[in-house]
Structures are given as structure tokens and as C-alpha cells.
Picture 1 (spheres, rainbow, N blue to C red):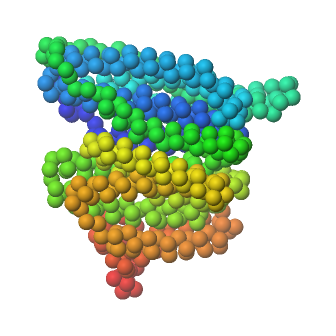
Picture 2: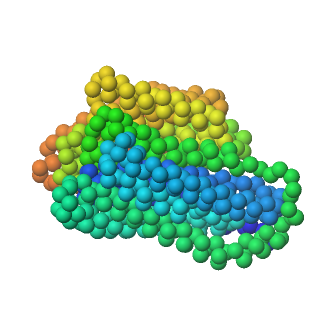
Picture 3: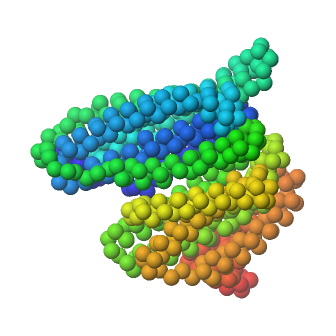
Length: 534
């Protein structure tokens, strides 16, 4: 029995699933802000980011690496070796998870108090340590299922985790927060409700991780007979040195985990070093960042198919096709990013009120500055995806190192020179992803000998989106008290998008046939031709 190629899912589908899952986690974080308030989210931030770091390593990185190794063994029908690799990875992953969990338990109290400014926050770290054990072997199981052709079943585990997390986390957090309020009154303290709420939220994460693990174990048990048949149909055990997966695990771990690791360091600096409160960090973590991340994920998802098409053409040495795809991809990406980030900046106050109803002034202020991330972050993610897909690991790691240095430098300048501590994190993240994306694009251009037309592909969309954003800003001022926040956002974005496309047509920044592909683009063409703009 062989692994059927038709059972495999296109690789961009897995990436889409990851970003959809992240969007669900961000929506959950918005709900949590209403449940455990800013201080609770400030306490939750570092343990949650630590959990996501481990999730990136133990689930995503190991899954990708094991799946890739199994596919290499599959070419020579060495299924016995492939199964051995997956089982060893499962054991090693579980052992590593137990060790990491133990380290977190040992240092939970001191780290929570000294680095993140909360004595009660150690409870959330304890919940994180338990959740890490539940996810430690999931990557190896998912990698085995994917490698042996059960891609859809592996993909479903992301959906199960995300939905379980969205349902259980606010539920557990609400119960724990209410209990903490009673403990506050009884013990005459004011931090227990927030700490208990954060712990409850991560307890929901533990439950979601356990549910996902149970699902994967059941699927493994059900599919073990089919996988055993595939193994028996293969060649005898190969005794030589097989393909290594350690390098892939390191590369994928860095890519998946480093944004969350940077966020942990930022919080340690903001709260531990600069002595801001956990509530202030909670405003950023739950009151600003979720909206930004959702916008980033949506934009990124729209461009993933082109990324994988480009990589496929490069791998198959289709240079002309790769150049055409890169030109189209880079132009469309900029055409989308400029208006989205600028519209979010001018509508920041309205978006905050639509999502959070009664946002704080600091959240509104941070939202306007953080909208810059909507431009830079997708560029960094997509260019890094291309390099990772083409196995340019050294270039990718170099980009990340330089980007992290740029992040640290920007944070230091904004904090210690300009005294802009509130917006330092958003500008540091913006610079970091911009450097990653810029270096990645430059490396891809060199690789393919591609020349980019900066005037038509960058300057023209910048001018058009700036003018459209200015009009959206005035529309927002006029309509906000007349039709409310949600309708104002809808009308502003539709009007701004219409004007943006019209300006692009007039300045030859987009072709007519491309506008026809966009929903509503035919109406824009009718207006442009009717007034003889084109």
C-alpha cells in the first residue's frame, strides 16, 4: 500500500489554517478583556506568549519537520525508518516538554514578580507549564499523520484547539475572576481577581490542549492499521544515515516562536525595567494588539497562494514565470497594504469604539501608531515564508537577527531618547518586520535577478492611499455622531476604497483588467470612463 498523493492538501492550506487559528485566538483575547480587565490581561500576557512559543516549537515546528522527513523516506519507500523517526520525535518532544514544564514551575514565582511585576502571576505560569506537557508530543503525531497522507485529520486539530480555546478560556476565566473578587474582599487585597482570572484563562488553554491531544491519540489509534499496512509494504529497514530533521526544527522554531518571544522581552522591559503597571501592558496586549493582528492575518491570507506559486516556479526552474509572479505579487501586496494600514490609522478611534465600546484614551492613542504594523508585518511574514519555503535558512536567520537588533535599537531610542514609552513597542515591532521584509525582498530580487519599478509599484499607491485616507478621515469626523461606529467604518472603507482605485486608475498604478477582477471594480471603471478620467 502506498501513500496516495490525492490525500495530500495544498501547502498554503496549512498556512491559512494557522492564521485563521491566530485570528480566533485574538478574538478570544478581545472577549477576555471584558472578563478579566486590563490588569488580568497584563498578567496573562507573558504566560500566554510563553505558551505560544512552546506551541510554535512543539506543534508547528516539529510537525513541519517530521512531515518533511517522512516524505523524503517515502520516495525510497523506507516507511519503517519514517515511522521510527516519528516515534522518536514523539518521545523526545514529550521529554523536552516535561523538562520545560519543570523549569517554568521552578522559576514561576520569581520570574512573575521580578520581570513582570506581579506576585500573583505565578499561577498563570503554573497553568502554562501543565498545558506545555499536553502539547509536547502533538507535533510528532500531527507530522506522522500528515506524512502518511492524513493531512485533513491533522488540519482539523488546529480547528479543534482554536474552537475549544475560544469557548473554554473565557468561561474558565470568568469563573476564576468572580472567585478572585470574593477572595479580594475576604483577604483585603486587590490583585487576586486579576491573577485568578489569568490563571483561569490559561486553565482553559490547558483544557483545549488536552482535548486536542485526545483527538490526535484517537485518530492515531484509528489510522494505525492503515499506517502499519503502508510500513509493511515498504522496503526493509535502511541502516545507513537518514535525512536529518534537527535543522528544520530549529528553523521552523525560530520562525514560529520569535514574535512571541520578542513580546515577552518587550513586556519584561516595559513592566519590569521601566516600572509600568501590568494594567498598562494589558491595554496593549488585549486592547490594541488583537485588532492589529487580525488585520495582519487577513491581509497575509489573501497573498499566501501567490507566495506558494512563486516558490513552486522557482523550485521547477521556471524563471520567467517566477519573475512574472513576483512582480504581480509584490505590486498587489503594496496596493493592499497602503490603504488598509492608513484607513486603520485614521479610523483608529472609531474601530476601538466599535470593538471595545468604551476604550481607554491610551488604547486609542496606541492604536493609531500600531496601525503602521499592518503595513510592515505582512511583508516580513510573507518574505520570510518565501525564504523558508526555498530553504534559504541562513538568509532567513540573518534577517531575523538583524531585525531583532533593529527592534532593540528602536525601542531604546523611543524610550530613553524620545521618552515615547507608550508607543515604543509598536514602532519597534514596525521596524523589526519592515527590516525582515525589506531584507527578504532584496534577497529574493537578487536570487531571481528581478528589477522592481518603485515609482509605479510603491510611490503611486502611497500617494493614492494617502489622499483616500485623508478623505476617510473627514468622512469619519462627519458621520461618527450621525450613523454610529460600525456604519461609519463601513461607509468610510467603501468610499475610501472606491476613491483609491479611481486614483490608481488615473495615475496608471493599476490596469483596467485588474480592477475588473475586484468586487465592485466594474462600477469604478464606469465612473472613470464616464468622466473621461481614463
